[in-house]
Length: 289
Image (tube, rainbow, N blue to C red; front, side, top):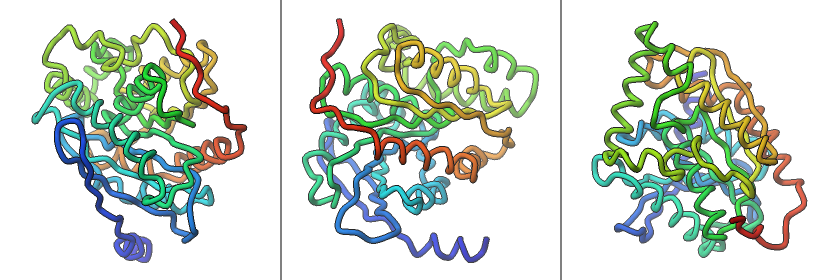
């Protein structure tokens, strides 16, 4: 473990800045471990923090693992606008802007442009799922996949696992962080019904990219993740799911550690391998009405 920690500390991402819809955005660019002229998979990753904090430092091990697996993958970790600065839809529009910027600047990023994937954890997975909806509706850019890790998808907090959280102190604390985050991100109650804020309640899920959705046992977010996966499958979207083992909810870094566990990373590697070998459509699918 000590050896891995030292190795990770020497892999420093390149810090980038570019113009976003509200000002300058910052992002960390993690290149693949194995140096090559270019890479095929670019994951635009949205960190967690319940919309009000940036937990990307706790995700370093996950970022290292994703760029070390033999899938020719790089990461663009976006430091999106937090809800305390500007609520919905600021972070969402930051995410969409980052995708467009990446496509326009593929050469500078050393990216072949082959596969663009959105990913996120917790609140960041809400943004990843929502940005996938935006890309479909605006008909650009074309996404190859969406990776949702223990996603926050239901501002109504109505799932069975969220209701059950009141029976156990650590789960209740995690649920309360969701409540606080949503209050900051969606201060206007009407916005909580918007599909770009509440993907779980979106009525139209066709023409979305393939998905891998990771949930965790004893997590208040478990049921909404698995319900969304079921809804995607019903809509005809190629979707894989994996329920991970429970983790200590009272440890704020445990969710990130769970995501970087061998079972999760193996599932993500398989998902990226499938994307890389899937035939590419010649153009984005037409928007259904």
